Image (cartoon, rainbow, N blue to C red; front, side):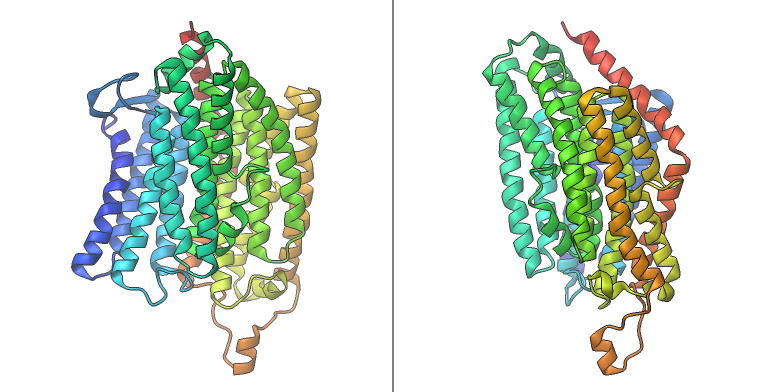
Length: 510
């Protein structure tokens, strides 16, 4: 099974993306159960790979039996299997919410079985693209998977209609520009080295003369992936995309979409291009851009009155912290960046599922409309409180440990970059305290605010969230606590892989 699972990890969601619309068109029946079963199977494959890599080391899988650098390879180690589990796990929650959750999304409002099948197929296609990015060891195929995931994401964003369509169009423009820049950068690298395999590139690039073509290649790749990852100041597509996307898709896209692009940035800049002078300069610049993003995202989040828009701007701050870890490049900083990807994905998925569900039930999106909701749904809002405290950085939630690793890496780095990074991360926690406590104070300590339409009609207040959406919210809150409690095993699983991988690439360099 160890030799089959890497290919199955990508092939299963691709096959499911084609199968579900066909099944819906032929049978005219709901595809809820087959979609959920496929996502569970993908998660099971990712967990099996995670355990196999932890026990037996990294797995190299040659597609079609052609090994690299001539063939296309998949490479799964502790870092990539961690991301695979994160993506497939969040997809299970999103599929459940898509099947049984909010009525405000395009899949549920007056939809047909065929439309449902198409949107569930789009979610599987998005998962296939993201898992391909995580697993591939070929820079051109990384572009292919980037575009697969982007096309599926545009479809899911636009499925809500109205403002969602406009947000999807802006997202498409940004994504097209990002993909083009990345592809041009890959073209330059191929012209300089004659290879697309990441390991082969890493071994050949140090012998390439540091000319303008290499610098342009590194900058184009870094900028393209930075747009995809919504890194400051290339984040313009993110706020509207997160706010207007239907809830099930928003919970998934906000949790993992930008994180996987940041992971690709980490792989290329931290491993493949790290031996070049241009790569080293870009990494140093990224530290300062990360600091700026942490501060700007936090300040703009404080200024928001709508909960979902506040969450969107706080995501830009979180991506800045991940960028700081990638830029520093030490094993401790990389661990902090990866842990923050996981912690932020769990918390942001939890919060977007919750906020979208409240909005779908007429609770509104403004902080004032959330007054007293904690008394009506204590378990749900206790879970949302756990997610908020994790983003602030309160132990034992996962967010505390990710910030601890990044702060420790900043202290170890020293110099102006270390000092600025340390100050920015502390400031981000203070700003998060301001904007999240404003929401939590309204939820738990204010008198309930009735929606005007219900108050005028005399209807009794219904559930704050659709009941099926409460399950992902509570489940993700539990995972946030478990991830924090078991932070040390995570460190032991990730750190050796990063140190071994960078040492292997350095040893193979001429």
